[in-house]
Amino acid sequence: MKKFFANLPYGNDKQTLSKWQIVCIGLGFFCFFMFLTIFCSRLYVFFGFDLMSVLNTRTDISKEYGLTWYILICTFIGPFCEEITFRLCLSFKKQHLAISLAFICIWFPVIFIKIKYLSILFFILIASGIFVYFMVMRYTTTDFWSKIKEKYVKYIVWFLILVFTLLHLNNYYLFEWQYFVAYILILSQAFFLAITTTYFRVNLGFAYCLLFHIAYNAGIILETLLRVNVLKL
Image (cartoon, rainbow, N blue to C red; front, side, top):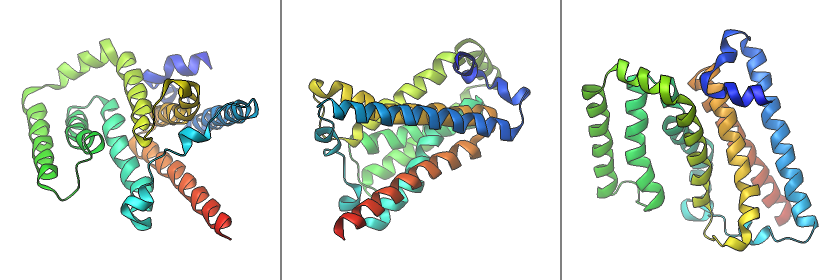
């Protein structure tokens, strides 16, 4: 396990393992830590601590956008934007970095300022993202990004994993220090998802991490819809 975390930023497994071996390692890691997270959450509730007060403040996208958009946003649009932002750039290719930085300029204000789609501000953000893309393509070089990767790849990978994880706090309306442990348990799922998608990205390519993220979110949406329908019955 120590070797897994140490090698994560560098994608060393692609040099010695087959694609199926890498997929199995990634899925095994994810399943083990997700089971551990769920077990700790159940234990937390068993000992009388409050987890539902936090979970009940989750943003209800289905009420805000409707069921169809809820499924599209959570299953496809969200994973696509997140993987473009946090994982596409891990190739350290100039064009990939330019696209990721452009998405940051567009997507982060939409999330934190709650800018509506098809608004004037949204089109301004798109223009700013396009501007950033062309600036990176015009004024940076492949050698520059290669040197950045050589010196800072470990820090960049873990920084992006942590930002991705903390970004999911935005899914909840409530933040109080008394629920700190509850947030750790909830965000740990996003943390291990980020590690797994990063592992697939650096060892297999962007398509694998995107498909895994979509599959994970689709599973959550399916489980949520089934639970709601069962409760209604």
